[in-house]
Length: 100
Image (cartoon, rainbow, N blue to C red; front, side):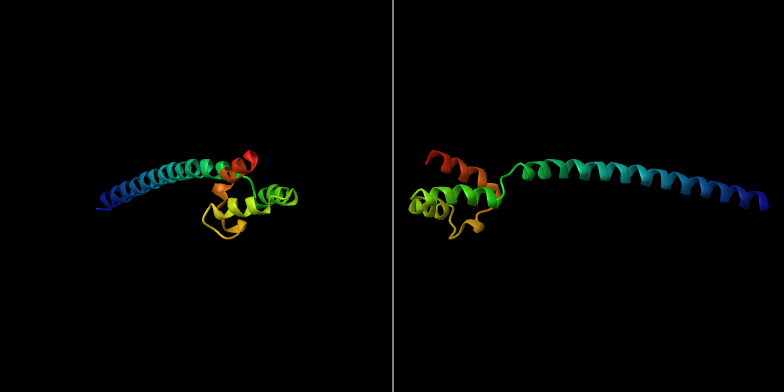
C-alpha cells in the first residue's frame, strides 16, 4: 500500500512539473506577442511631430501675416484650437502648412 501511495505521489509531482513547464512556455509566448503588438504602435507614435513643433510652424505663418489661413487650417480639422487636433493628424497639418 505504501508503495502505491509513493507511486501516486511521484506521478502527481511529475504532472505538476509538466503543468508548470507548460504554463511558463505559454507566458513567454504571451509576453512576446504583447511586445510585438506594442512595438509598432510605440515606434509609429514616436515618429509623429509633437504639439510644440506644429505650434512653432503655425506661429511663423501667423507672424508672416497669415493668421486667417492658420485659423482656416485649424478649423479645417473640425476643431476650434490647435491642441484639440489629434496628434495622428499633425503630419497632415504640416503638409498643408508646407503648401502655403
